[in-house]
Length: 535
Image (cartoon, rainbow, N blue to C red; front, side, top):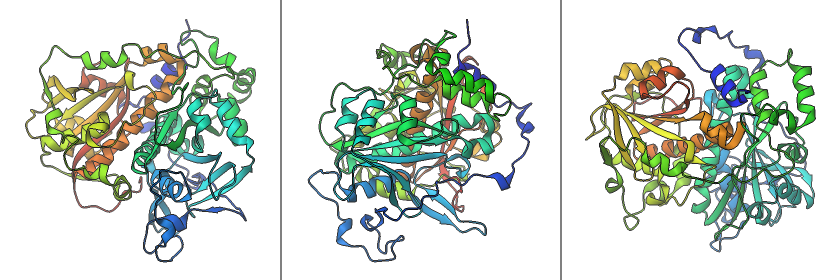
């Protein structure tokens, strides 16, 4: 029986106290630029449509073109605001060599490994085709002007009806070297989480613009390599977000498909015959063989795989730790008839204000604050954020280490997501222990609550093959972004942590070390500090 690539990769990229100091150091002269350098004589300007006065891109006062239409149509004004909130430049730190651009979505180390492209089927003022997004100028760069591109996109998504019907679709890719330069093999985790952050922004903004999104990571990777004209050894497609007018989603559609039988030695080799040859040719030269092997093994073939039934995974999450006492937070969340919550009222402004918190001051978070933050992440419709999409959250478990929250004794709690019920699984939680698990970062020890996302990786791989690794981390990144934005709306702070001692975290949570720790988000009371360079 062959061990799946996802499990091998995860085990081999764990951080441990005895090996954390083995990093060879950074070659700063080889640090990749965190954006693509585009040069076009005919870009599609998006900057004039931004609602800023003065406009930082044009230097001009805000004009009437920045007003949004009220009829629900998708136009350049909508696209401008949507893309800016998704992954635009929202801050600049001057540096001698080149400025550090802070984006709308956070990124580990400020490396921004994700890229976004826009596929246009029908958009006034923009020819059909494929466009790259240039964040430094906030404009679209035509890469392939052809009405056939939208058809190629639909084919790559196995003719998903929601993708085929969308006037525009956002394609999210990961540029491996941007993150690998610093994080080595563990970079794949960071790339997926960072991509989940920007996807979370895109999905939050759509309802605020009167539109809907369909999110999918179910597509033929090889066809996307051809459509985007990318080198699969350097860049890979991770998700597609179809944007359309409000209404019911078209059918048939799917968000997640399996990459093959998980415990069979053959699926990875069958994806593309050339993959095996590439493995053999590049094994010695590849600085990240585990990263590339997992990404290749999780690719989907030209023929659509079978659709995986949702089963009872969601019910299983709700039933876990049902034997222990729990406290529901539902009554602490404002009902739908209450005044709209700030994040729901204006997510654009919340995204503009968002910065990863660098330091917390020790203090106590109120029960209501924690309730609304968790509701935004796990029950967004209850706080006016609409039904936020996911790939398959049924395999993602959540624990909360409560350190200083009003009405809760310190301890480790399991979160039943649907009922927003915190169930005590381990009394007592030492802040210094949490800080140690977060690689000694004071954010862990000074937080009021720390959210841990975990998964039974073997079970997820049985359902989705090696591609499960993508789904788990993308979903965790989306949830983490909502936690960040909700915390800011509550006057609190938040910071995502992708670096931690994996096995020691599972020990704290009381789960087997075979289970995967996917992501950590620290919540707390912010101390005054300069903006974080990780966005």
